[in-house]
Length: 315
Length: 298
Image (cartoon, rainbow over all chains, first blue to last red):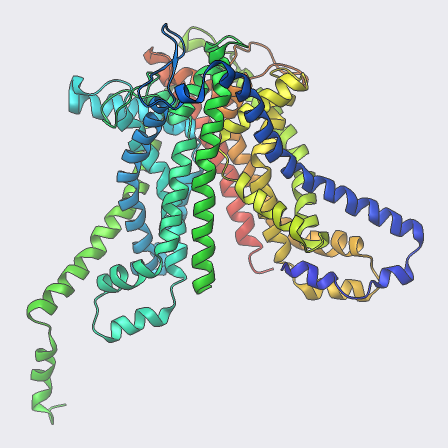
């Protein structure tokens, strides 16, 4: 497997030449390295334990059927108190939908340009610039979504048709954040497509666009799907952009002009101190967190499966 | 060439006509369309930069760095959040470096090749995809409540440490794999123990790659907001932190605080805060890029 281990296999010469104390010290060091490695396992275990154990008291008060009742609203603070999580999931899906509608074409267009068209020198400038988008802190994007995109562009353009806090502004900025995710993973997949496939198509008289769209694109499809799934997982888990720009009113709609609250938006609201400790709405934090954790897990695991697939086929 | 009078005509006939010409034209046009699409992302980055500089530049003064937060926008500053960020990130570095490097060395050099190792690796790649707010919930339940650290620098640092651990380990693993097997074999053949080999040959070779990974991870931690808000760092701090048990706030949280206030003056403060935050984050990234470039061929 790992290259390193090969070098350390074979007869252990140190056993013949080193004193017992030195070998003891050696064992202690290796043991403590193993303990360090356990921390990551403990982290996962604690996440699951915390989310599940704190959700159990919540689900004693609010039944699973109410939680997943598609007609119930998410209304933890006003009477009648209702915990219909679909309203928060719908908010998340609203932002997922519109940010992907924007980010997928741009991200894939960038990937195709970088992999199939760009001169190496153009590529060496363009790629780091696009990747810089991934290093921008999300609170900066959040500021940008609220002040520039919504207040300076969308409101003057659409007037009162669009709420001050709306899904569109959040989605546009979210899309900018997603461009490097989609572009760089898709580009890796396209770069892994063997040269022979391209040259075969050129030999048959295809143009560059035809090679890119009918040969490289389908051949890289599993990597492209992986990049989109990872992008979805990022949107589902992203907090600051939606909390600042999309609003804090749960709303069962896919209309981008309206205010929505996402799962993460609600969690942050609780974190800001809006709910009293030990109350049902405070415990709902963990139930929503568990739902969020499972959703991102499903998207990430599926994406990793697709990534392994394109690596197996071509690399 | 004059001996072949038909040649010129032949070449002209090779010019595509009809549907082939159309396909070629479309293909040529697609280059500009795709270039334009790739530039959209860059344009957004530039737009973001210009917008924040226009809004925030006038607020950048020495007072902005030395003033505590205030309810008057023109008197509010970054002092406590800047100090909080330095404390938190300093502690994160102290904790994450040994644990991440230790984990990576164990996985790459010492772990028995079995099912357990596969679980450890799979777990790391899944942890890397867990949203930061979930780490915040974990920190709230474990560090703030269960271990009783409160909303302190210690709790914040440990939360961020867990958040960036997976990406730091993965980067360190890649750096270790770059060290050639022959280096290890040479050292072992001379009678060094496994640990001596790792310590004096593998680690020095992998160090630049590891440092690059740590710097990038710290840049992420420096901009993290949601996880720290969850553990209760969204507070008004008007003193300088002196211990890891202090309550704290950080720069991104201060920026968030100013962003969500309705008054125009706070928007300017948020923009000025973003200029400072982006300068820090981008210089971390720049340092990592230079380091990676310099040691690429070694």
